[in-house]
Length: 474
Image (tube, rainbow, N blue to C red):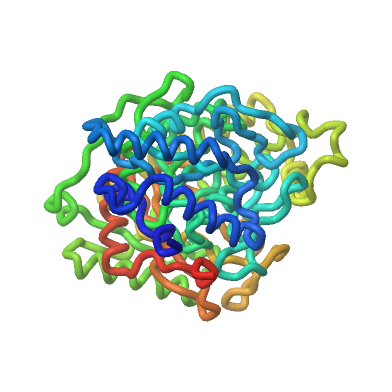
């Protein structure tokens, strides 16, 4: 049954509807995979156990009744990052400051997944308060990469990525304020979507998506295939009153002719932060795939993205430090080393005044308008996800092309698009010399997730897509 746990979610649902397998068998197979691998990975921090099996039994009864309302995820076992509310489960965001907190009700996106037939297996690990590109905390410890246990699965959705890549979950939910869906997807060899703020409701996420976080932070789907991302996106999308960025945008999938008529701008690096040679080669491979598919692909890098990186830090780093600082005050002994490190970086900068916050907000909008204007000619961008593949636990800098790349700079390829509010998907395409997965990033204009995912699917089709890490077959 191990092969079952690596099937695409869409195929699992189809086989359950056809009664080739039962939902109970699928959940049991995933729990068996978790029992084998979670001691090595530490991806899950809490399981629903008997509750998930009861849900599966009810799912099988609906199939036996020939229920006409079976959803697209009927019987599919899924996981949720432990910063999103699931009724009766802990939503601690990796911090002792919320230890034991149990959600009273499902976040809207979780309720939508359940309505579509998904079965929630449990909650996955995060760094403390989600403030890192690696996953470790004082509550549950460190999550390891399924490709190499000596390396990180990324953060802050690292537990989610490790669970999906290893076949412990068919797909699930992450969140992203500076690459926290895309970097773990890239590190673990899976797919992920950072949507436009408000396209998928962040209601029920902690920290709350309000103020500056509402501009840069989102929740989104993670899965092994782009086809599964498309299903999850359709299920989860739609406005909710609890999300201040929400807007009633209908789902609009492009036709083949729409794809052939767009111009795609690609770049291998930004001229500031170098990337590994294999990362360059992976972006070139993806651009060649799109050209062979009949799309117009040209070398192009938007003007203004370096300013976007600087402004992102003022939103995420400085403002984040100001918002989270009072929570941590007086609890220093309960704070993880990674969060203390992040807080030190934030504290090295002056806190915002009313004037500096106003100036920052206006500058952000000016940069966004400038980049949007350029993307009239290039509605899709193709670029790296990060400067490096998955790094070893504890590393903080890397030498690339005789240049030192520091921790905060390595993910700038993601951070731009949080600041700008653009949707972006990650697809696995290449590998490093060590055999680690390397993804590419496909970026679109606000509210155009459907175009992003359609281009991502073309990249996946010609670029290889998901490959199971060796640990998944243990």
